[in-house]
Length: 220
Image (cartoon, rainbow, N blue to C red; front, top):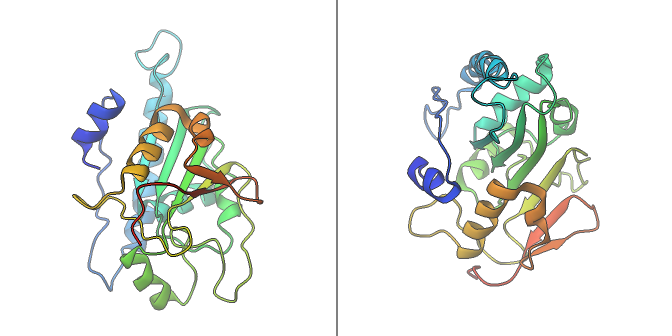
């Protein structure tokens, strides 16, 4: 999604949080992510002040959309447990987050400043296929199962959306190749949060907070 698409589709004002998140396909800016998390905390503290009574953001819903390396930014943020007010952010959407799967529950459950968290998982993501080999560790944005086949404990304050059921290949954030089902699911979650999980093209899994994309919009 472009920022213009997000702004138009969600009837929103979009604020870009820019940081040096790209070096190359074989070198990932983990240290940059740590520095970015510190700057993000400073920004969120400013936003918290604007959410006070009588301030311009007091009645406005606030949503954070993060993609890929944003997973590392929020990992650092969760591990430092900043004293941000509860309910500061309505929801966080993490699309194919590039961060380690093992132990993610520990830091994610510390993100108490948001009401909802949604994690989009795509095993076909090419960048995360690379990092899986680089770090020899399962990546949160690619799978909920560790490399040894054991299921990873999930964060109880998050919902996980699996974009790649069975042999279906879903394209995500690729211009001209995006699945219609994914587009609609992402847009609904962006606007309505957990209410969107009742869609007919999302099937609840036994874990309770895991949902599988089903129905039209997949390519075999």
